[in-house]
Image 1 (cartoon, rainbow, N blue to C red):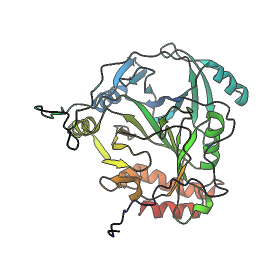
Image 2 (image 1 turned 90 degrees about the vertical axis):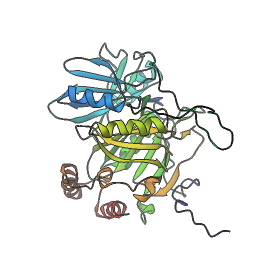
Image 3 (image 1 turned 135 degrees about the horizontal axis):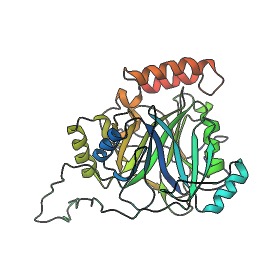
Image 4 (image 1 turned 180 degrees about the horizontal axis):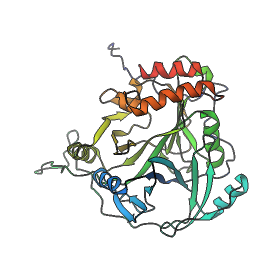
Length: 377
């Protein structure tokens, strides 16, 4: 023993649930979705949105007077659909089903019939509403865009076996090329009901639970949820749900090739005058190297690289939630990232707290105390 204390020890438990706690999955779900397909937004200024998107690393797949489709370099559907609207808002996620038979099975269990998607996307969709009121599409048989040229990872000299000899390292300060959509995080006042809905109807499974310190007996307040692809690894989380005083979008994340692409791309964004919310660092749950930015409409978006991949054999981890426990290394979580910096967003959340405490939902006074303790940790 050398007396060294790991400040992160105990933040992620590999032991799984205690007796009687949530198992993190449902037996015999209706379907098992394969991945996120895309995210949908409404914004009043599509030109401004496209300028930021290109600086962030997206490529335009389609542009009309009323719609913008943004893609990464991976083959498949666009990552983001933005339609012209009178105000900026998150319209909801779309998940990819294995095939159209899954859509019929889902329709039989929930009621809505499969409907054709617009010609630019192809395929069919079942449109659902989760318990927090968010529209959720489940799609199948959509068109696949071909792959685009990729941003190659840099060759690294690691340890004592150099892979790069007589060559320098000069990552260009250009936009990081987004490869694909990774995950979306949403807040809900009905956390447990919403969690169980995604597990039951979409077959998602939990990778990690977080609970408020001193409140584990009341159950978790956040879950990082992945797709169940059997023995095929999936992202540590495709969807993350967190309890809060309002139902809202928190952030979405997009994979880039490596740390150099993420860091140099961040310098490019900074030079263009965009606002970094938090970063660069490495998360604990999911292990991603991260860098968070605000787009001109205030939506938080993340570049990430080197995330965990789990198959369905791994049981959920359990850990206390804390601001300091969000990263293994990196700067402290900012007030902007935590949603407590002075401004319109924090004022909306403050009003939401007052409203939520008056309503019948899971966000009560005890949960508010837990949230405030996390924000001040």
